[in-house]
Length: 385
Length: 136
Image (cartoon, rainbow over all chains, first blue to last red; front, side):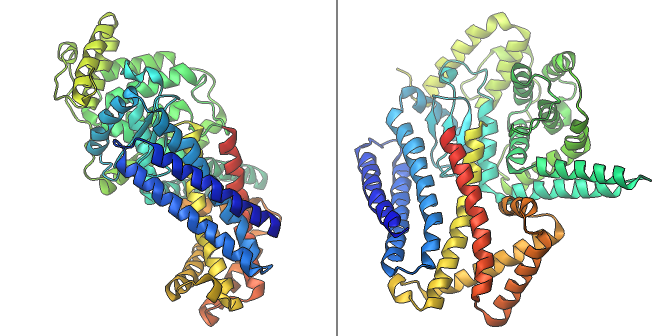
């Protein structure tokens, strides 16, 4: 172990020096704060490296057992720097900056006051990595600089940043799950001991199913529907129809809850004023016509409407309590005529809702509408030409 | 969110708990061995480490007894449930640890082993997730 420890200390010396050199080489004028955070992280890694050095020089057989977790943590952060932030900064193009400039004010308007910068990487499916939560990396598909139709996914990703920022959100949702299933266990009529054991096993499996990742996903759906309204409901239905096959199927290897549960949570998040709104009714009709497939028995245990109702309500309470500046989407429904007209003052959420209305009601006009939106957005972000 | 986002968040949460517990244990062990002159941990760091271990043990005990826990403890609770050592034995060991911290304000060798076992489970989970991240 001593030789190994000694070798890792030397190795980290040269890796950290290389990372520091790469950071210095970057032209970070758009990302001063991020560059500062990366330098801070390097300083922290050097402190960990020094701790390993001291453990090595003391040479106590008991203390050396503290070295592997330190090594694993250093490895994790080297990954974050060399695979996440550095390549993002190095490959950043005008298009990435365009989206970043569009999203920064959106994040503020949506209550993410802690977000100081966003590093956009238009080289992958939608994802957010909030390794440094005040400067998340947002991955998005490259066509996003010319198409708005999928941009509603951004709000779901911002929801992950909210979930990450306030750990009590996850704890409160975990408590909802635990209480719900504990009460379910009590609600039992006469039953043989074998049947009862089987039922309890299914309930325990359901508790385990709602691990952190899935709570995070359902919260982020509720958050996105909360701030982006019917456009996100449409996005959720669209995603379900594009990718999910049987929307009731529960997959233990998928971090996402089944599509039917996600669509239901989004619907439940909408303000009652949207219940009879034209676009909402149209999306609902599409969903009802297309949703089908066998309904597996574990869906009703793991994703019962009563549980999703409670998770949705708890998520909304958390958003309202922890990010009071978050603006809930409440614009009265817009007809086709109003939706076709884009105002330079329209925030992204309204643009996306107008887009959903145009796309669903006059699809042949949509490409033209989208082009005019981008001309306006590029002017707004200051990246035109 | 893709798996990348989910695993990133999980790893970050695990990294923080692992680091806090490992650092606290290191500081308490260094102090018990009388080797602090080499490490130069401050009195504040030492007392914070004691407090961290005491709080951690209390939180873990409460989670095991009540069956619900905050998200950062869930991976360790799952590992307890699926491991060879019965959960009841973990509860007994943690209660003894809690008593020692309250009574003596310091840890004895046999109870340090319990914390090391927990740390080892946390580290196993962390490295498993780290390998997962590399494979994406």
